[in-house]
Image (cartoon, rainbow, N blue to C red; front, top):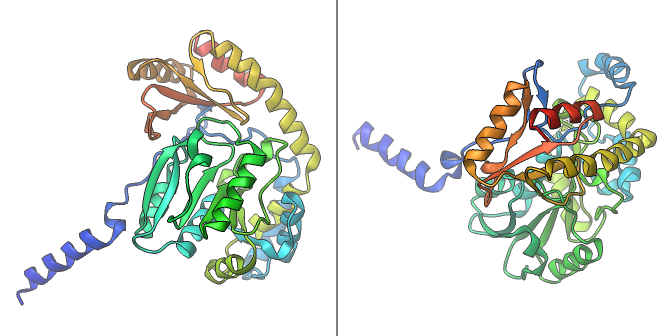
Amino acid sequence: MDPDAVEALLSGARDDQDPVSDGARVAHGSSDDPQVLDFSANTNPRYPEAVPRVYESALPSARDYPADDYCSFRVTAAEYVDCAPQCVLPTAGGLAAIRLAANTVLRSGDSVVLPYPSFSEYAREIRLQGAEPEFVPHDELLETDPAGHAMVAVCNPNNPTGELYDADRLRAYADRCREADTVLLVDEAFLDFTDDPSLAGTDGVIVARSLTKMFGLPGLRAGFAVATGDLRERLAAARLTWSLSEPANAVSVHCMNQSEFVAETRQRVARERPRMAARLGDRFDVSDSDSPFLLCDAGSSEAVDDVITEAREANIAVRDARTFRGLDSHFRVAVRMPGENDQLLAALGV
């Protein structure tokens, strides 16, 4: 066969069968400009005081491969979310835990129930496995029938809307998923900003946790998955070897022991979030939130452009939420320190 024809045939096969060929990158918040006050990323503007010292102390150990059992990390993480240490699987961030779950559970042709609007990476990770998302409104997710689906994903609290699912209803839905032999993936990236209990250690559930939101270290790339029984064994077999660097391991263990820092952060967010919501509510429709961010409806797509411009003129970045499925007139802002929040409110004239 002619070489060009062979290449065309192979290219066609890739286009038809390889989801990577159509896998566009997902838009996210955050600015790497140090002159910009970043309200577009939902991360704590503070981190525990001793983090630089802990990180520097761990650097010499980075010259060797880390011990892949991550014993101290597992024990500390288990205490942090109240599960057994053997259920914890360290990952390079919450998204790595989500990919591990998708890669382990899903096969080509599977269907997965996804909420919308919600974290856009879910759909991408699912499609990368050759599976297909079935989107349902986020506030109707717990009413869907999990039977016939390989997985249901839920973001709790939901991003970008910010609200928690009722804990009893979510646990009851986990029971329904287990009865239907459907894996429930629960993304708890922002749960530690609340007092609600984790589903970590619940049979049939994979919990994905991020350590970079609460502790203000998104570039550290640290998190973990939690599962039990055969599901845990499969995740453990598929987990990337040396999934955490030694500095990330050491800093994570330190941070998860900082209960006072976590409590103070929760208290600050609980004070600032309603204050910001009330002021923003004078101009925008603000969604109820249990999270360190607020979703605002500006009324039109053009109005969102105006908000982004107003913020940019004050060297502030806000999150254009029109990239989320189902949103066409929204933006999102993080809850930062009181003085910083005042700068945002002044920039938006509220």
